[in-house]
Length: 355
Image (cartoon, rainbow, N blue to C red; front, side):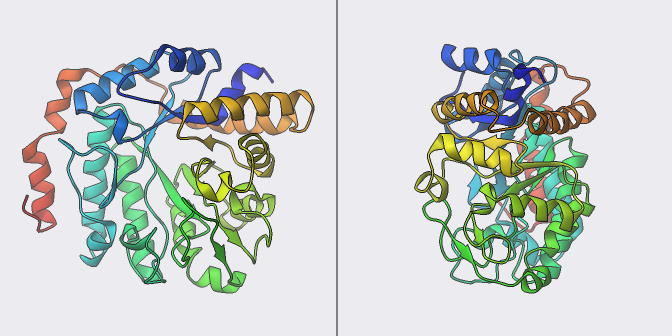
């Protein structure tokens, strides 16, 4: 394995509306595989497209994954000019998978025209605990059958619009009380109980050929009583075998308190890759740099086997080869054809929403 491919297993955040020299150097020199964007990276669609074009000039063989959490409802990073969809719970209540498909196709069209090629959506969590605020109305519903049919429609909608979907948060965050952004939640259910509710939408997502599944920072007693799923080999093995899933597994943000309060950045990175993560996700360049350096050293010391890294980089590159083979920079004037008031209003009318 060429160590130059190691960067493909990292997704990093960046600091602003354009790249700093330090960010450019780090991404290019280390062949980093992906960038995640937040609201502080967004001003308007033209600026977003320019930023993405700038990022993609740093690519080596294949384009980078340009990712975002653009779920609709309260979780959306791009606001002005993008269609402001209601929560997935409100969309789920309309009980129309066809509409869910249309919403996600429009979402994908808007992201794709700006160069964003991966959306960390849909949430496959079933909202079974009414006091659960971290998921809450991000879920399509409180019943497993509702969530299943909308998850499938959402994935198809995103893929039809040339944006990769990511099913999250495996193995299901809908029954927890604690928020993994701030604390480490525990799920105390048997495998049979998980199969009846939490796992079913992920089975549906896998059958819908989702390209990414995000592993959650949860301790699930039935799988591993000690480690959060993100760092647990039994959790990744279970995901692969139970879902018969062969595509990419990405961690949730490794800078969330559920991980940071319990492990060093360096240790957690090594544990996640050894456990089975294909890609580790960081919201800041500083943490990505620390983790990257630690992983490189762990390979040198044979704490991580080279074959493990080769296996992961092959999965990443296969995904990129299949989806991003023909890359061309975003042509800024084409954006207005896709992102405009008329198109937005048309889809909102179908949802019965007037702006």
